[in-house]
Length: 274
Ligand code: ZN
Image (cartoon, rainbow, N blue to C red; front, side, top):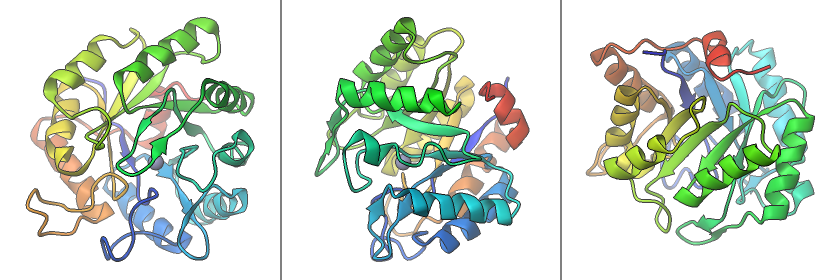
């Protein structure tokens, strides 16, 4: 089976020190966690940034600082920036302002709208097509964020129209309240409907984490983990997750099932990056 790509999503838009004391909020905290996660085997860094007050932002300067600090730390990871809807603004210019930063290799792209627990994951066709264009112009590979089934089929439509260039790479975000439930049947349905040359990860949100990562590892898919997706390590919610213990758990499951872990260069090859 192909080697396993582990993506670490250390921050997201939701974690705070109140929700989880190990939340990586500042760029310094993010870098410290990424270094530990790279040592354990994570090869892709899915990046969000915060402003001075700790609130989510898409500000280019913040992303630039983070990317520069990763380079200074000689951290060889695939840098994937978020263009998501909760980065403090919803215009095309706001959400795509970081896409021209040198050294970025991937960007997230949702190909439809859905609900988060308390807000709308708003992605109009115009916004999706413009972000896709900007991602292409900058030579980046999109990671299609699929919160619901329609987003998979919309991405396939965009590929046929030439708006997205294959082979496509998907992340199935499962168990966000208001979006697609994390069931084995739902995951099988998504995988069954992928284009033949596509690659995929799964993000099992909250207590869907262990079942979804285990299925993805067994099925030949890839895995995303991190405090963006999981705040509590165990199902009872008595142990705080850390970026490190979440990656370690993925590695343990992969080891137990005989799946080798991809290095950053092997991940670049599997994902057909430029
Ligand atoms: Zn994200």
